[in-house]
Length: 427
Image (cartoon, rainbow, N blue to C red; front, side):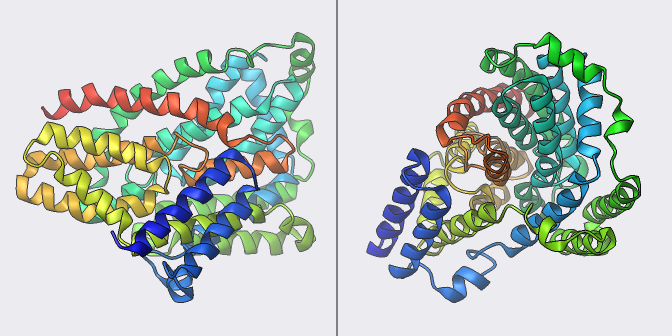
C-alpha cells in the first residue's frame, strides 16, 4: 500500500480507538477523523461531499431527517404511549415476554422497512415501557437494534447491502426470501434464547409498577386524535413509497423528506420544537464516518482487503464461502457494511461468473456476514448509531463497550448458526 493509504489506516484506527474508549465524544472523534483524512490528502471536498462511491451518503442523511421529523410529530400524539401500554398488557407486565414481543415486532418490520426507520419507530415505545415498568432501557434497546439487523437480512429490501447485491447478481425478491428468510427465522429463535441469558439481570419484574400499567386504558394515552390520523396517513404513504420504489423510481430519501415536511406543515406545530427532536449529533457522526470510510475506499485499503479475502482460498468453494462469511462479519463490525459490500460485489460477481450457478452461495455468505456482522459493535450498522443517539438524548446513554460486549457474543453465535445452514443448503 502507499504511504497515503497507511496514513488513512492510522487515522481511522485512531478515531476508532477514541470512539471505543470514549476519551472524546464520538461525534468529535468521527469529525476529527474526517478532517484528518482531508489534511493527509486521502479525500477532498469534492469526493467527500459529491462522490457516490466514497463520499457522504446524503440519501441516508436526508432519509433520516425525514423519518425523524415524522417521529417527532407522532411523539406529540400519544401513539407511542398507546403502543407501549398495549404491549405491556399483551405480555401481562412480565419483562421477558415484553422483550420477546418488541424484538419480534422490530425484526418483522425490518424485513419490509429500512432498519433505521424501524428503530426510530420502536425506540420511543420501548423507552415508555421501561419507564413505566421500572426496567433499564439499555438491554431492550440493544436487543431491538440487533433484531432489526437480523430481520433486515431476510429480504431484498430489508437492508441496503441486499439491494446492492440484488443489482449486481440478478437475484430476485423470491431468491432472497427462499434462501435468507429460513435462516433468519432460525437465528431469531437463537437470538431470543440469547437475550434471556445475556439480559437476565435486567429482566426482573416489578409487580406494583406492572399492575399500574395494566390498569391504564390505551385510549386515554391519545392526546391529539386528529393529528394522529393525519400522521398515520402520511406515515402509511411514506411506507408504501418505500415498498413501491422499484415501480415509482422515487428514492426513499425523497419519499421520507417529502413525507416529513408535509406532515410538519399539516400538523401546525412549531417547526423549531419539532426540529429539536432531530438527532443532529447522530447525523454529524454519520457524516464523519462516511468521510473516513470513503477515504479508505479511495486509497485502495478496502479493495486490497477484499481481493486478499477473495484470493486466499481460490478454487475451494467451501473455503471461499467460509472466508467470505467470517471476513465480512469481521469487517462489517468496524466499517459500514454498505461501502464494504459495494466494493466486494464486483469481486464476488467474478468468482460466481467463473464458477457457475453453484457459486451463488458466495452471494449469500457475503450478505449474511455483512448483515449479521453489523451487530458486533456500536458503530457496525447505521441502526446501531441511531439507537445510541436516541438513548443519549433520552438520558439513558449506552456506551460503546456496553453494546459491544453483547454484540460480539451475538455476532459470533448467529454467524456460526449460518455455517451448517449454508453447508446443508448448498453442499
